[in-house]
Image 1 (tube, one colour):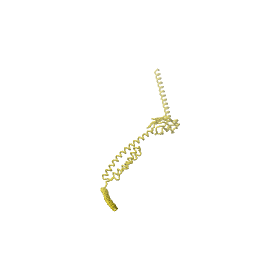
Image 2: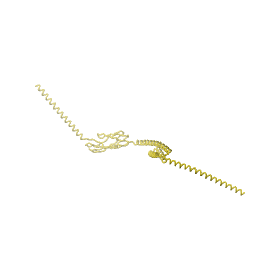
Image 3: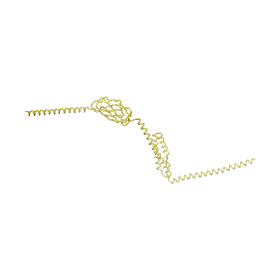
Image 4: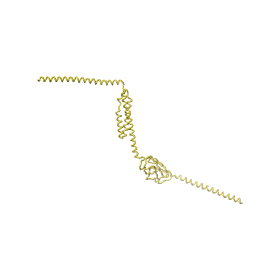
Length: 294
């Protein structure tokens, strides 16, 4: 009897444990289902915000108005949407929110602030629970003025250096012209007058700080140099017969000059003799007249 009682008690305990296990399993499944349902419901009620447009992305130091266009990607209307903007050298002082944004709608949030540093700046935009990043370029007008002046100074130095180099080539060209002329080449059509004029004007413009005129005259000088250099390279030797003719002409001119000189000389001598004779005759007549009067 006692043995049967123990077996019965064990059977009852095991049955009770099984019922509890099944009950716990059912409760767990119910809770899992509830959580899944809540997650599904939450996912269908999305309130995502996307950034559609942002400008300006290029601005200057000082006050600025950022225009932030957003879109409601969720299925619920969102009210009073504001944007917080932060970044190096930037501070906001006023915000105009988007009052209401229905699902699928777009609207603008305007943020007013001040930029104190130039360069490339990365801004952080926080709208509702979303965070976006935008890169902007900030310019400093005062820095631009300094930069422009520095650029002009460097360009003037560059022009001055080119002028000095061209002056050296000009001197070499003069020597080449002289050598070719001495070696019997025709250089009569080559002239460096304009080249010299352009170089002088370019130098004066550099001294005056007139970059435009300096560049213009340097360009003209380079073109003139190349033009005269091409003519020199194309110069041909004067034929021997032409040289003989030239020498004959020169000799004839010299001979003619000598003949004219002696002709004039003889005429002057003859005229002098005639004048002397006339003077002598006049003197004789005067003497005779005085004697007759006595």
